[in-house]
Amino acid sequence: MSSAKIGLIGLGTMGSALALNIAEKGFPVAVWNRTTARTREFRAEAGDLAARILPTESLAELVAALEKPRAIILMVPAGAATDQQIEALAPLLDPEDLVIDAGNADFHDTNRRAAAGPPMRFLGMGVSGGEEGARHGPSIMGGGDKADWDRVAPILTAIAARAPDGSPCAAWLGEAGAGHFVKAAHNGIEYADMQMIAEIYGVLRDGFEMGADEIAGVFRQWDEGPLKSYLVEITGEVAAAKDPRTGAPMLDVILDSAGQKGTGRWTVVEGARLGAPIPVIEAAVTARDVSARLEERAAGEARFGPAPQPLSGEVSVLEQALIAGKILCYAQGFAMISTASAEFGWSLPSAEIARIWRAGCIIRSAMLDDMAEALEGAPERNLILDPAFAARLEADLPALRRVVASAALHGLAAPALSAGLFWFDQMRTKRGTANLIQAQRDYFGAHGFQRLDGGPEKHGPWAKPANEI
Ligand code: 6PG
Image 1 (cartoon, protein in one colour):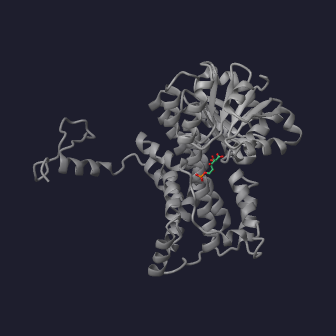
Image 2 (tube, protein in one colour):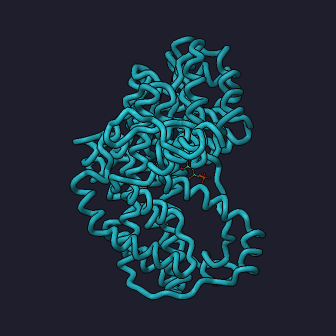
Image 3 (tube, protein in one colour):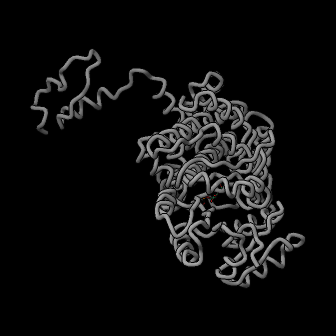
């Protein structure tokens, strides 16, 4: 029987949620999982949606259950597991069948898989929103041949989140790995947003000496204002939660060592390869690495002294600082997307990307509405130069300076906020200090330089011959 519109492989948390979402939107979906017990359990728990779910117990059965040309979503771990799954499917599929990798793949892998060509078509699709998003509406970032995307677009747009204006948060963004690249950039920004929030939490907890409940109140209030976003909202939620075992605030019993699956690091590596500065994201990834060095940090505190001095100030200054930090971080993120777009020959639509991040994904926020508008008019212009964002920065930067300076004076770590600030100060300085770097390079290596006055001399009158150390 070939009656399913689409197939889905991998009934883990994300795959199960996505399959239920597809079924709920009216599309019969055939599912297969490595372990048949899980497939049966999934169907048994599907409730009213079970009628639109076809459980299959072999890949051949899955393939036979699909309408032609077939479309199969893979939701399996990135890397080798994805390659193995594609290899196992390939002999069963026709050239016009379509495999859609919805995992968190490295976009270089997606480029490679897309370039492999026959025996079937291939799309790389970034999906954001965690389990809740996958179940009720994720943000979907597609990459591959536009015609392949168009074939499955009715299903993908039906299951995607809806932005406040009702438009679906799903889009085709470009060839091959474009969708997975944008998903990695999303995750880099996710790391940065989370880190800046954590730094402000640190100022509230260790500087202002607030308890978790009070901190929850601060974030809940901020979620009503310009910082309105999923991550600020859940910060309020997790800060208010209590540990069922001890009754203590949940945050106070969680080890301060951050995990990471690697997508933030991919973004940093790609930023470095492209020469696209993303210092806030770099600082956020590094901060997670530092957080994991528990023993060294304990030894550091034993040697250099304990917790920082308390500091006082207005909570509204912290809100403004976080707003400024967020604008700077997104300015870097979108600039990196633009650089990658030129480098890889994509035409990544920045405004559309901002639009499909407005709902469903982890970094969804009210501010993305304004960013979409700013990027619509001038996709290549750095966000800090957009008139509206420039004005917001002028209003909020003094607060960011105060917070970064106070954090430094009081020994509170704020690496992402300060990385944003110092990037900004470099970006707004016409005459920087790289003239000295050029002179040094010429001195020790005869690397040459350009003169401000356009003169022909390429080397300095250094005391030693320029090519000698
Ligand atoms: C999303 C998330 C998701 C990611 C988790 C955990 O957009 O839904 O980015 O894809 O896997 O947030 O990521 P880390 O383990 O790297 O923190």
